[in-house]
Image 1 (cartoon, rainbow, N blue to C red):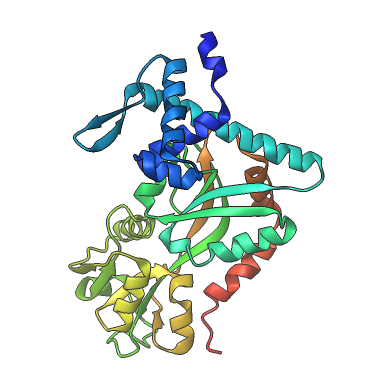
Image 2 (image 1 turned 60 degrees about the vertical axis):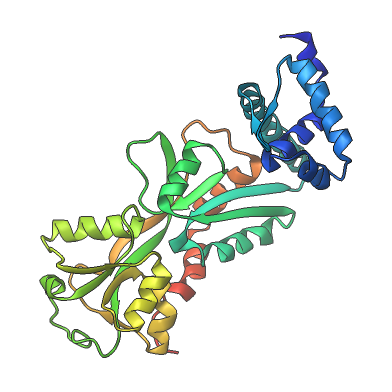
Length: 315
């Protein structure tokens, strides 16, 4: 290893990462509570130690050089290991501390804060950074190692992933109480072919599960409307746009209030599972390990937490 690299300091790395994230010396100075000249000096010293320029201006815009991208990747590893060290030392001192970085698909976003709050009752010094996004973005985040854990439904089979199913995710058919299929007990799945069916966008876990189920049952939808979220589908069904196939917890409040009715199609609810996912071989932080242990050992408590989202009985 070049001796000059051993002279790099963590403070220099923090300043460097601030410039990378803001692409601005002045905004990095504000974030770090430094003067702009102090930021410039830290970057100049770092460039001397690396032996290559880290940033370049094209017009008035700042860009990372190839050397900066390599240094940023290495700094990610360094700070992740330092954070893990901090958590390990806290554990040795008798308390679990640190931040759990977690990304979830949008269809589980309402339940996740309750799950995290229950975990934090056991470990009050733990904090969270929660990202809510689409299934496709969650898969990309797994590839880029951006989070400690991901919560999602259908786990890709073509990737090296470890996953643990921790909660049922029943999918049901709902509609406005005035819908022509409402109240019937003799429904057949092929009646969906003559109905307007509300769908999530391609790539959504709910959409993928429903498409596979309908294909297996040889039901071919003829009239569909694509809506961009489970919440939008629920409100589309309330508005009378058509039949929505949605997770029970997304529709439960409106089933209880009477704004929606569940349609009793054979084969539904369609049961899938929520899973905690991470890349195979990933070095998990003590907080992430503790959270996975909680999911494995407290299934009954988690089901009880979820009941408020899946209980569709009228109050």
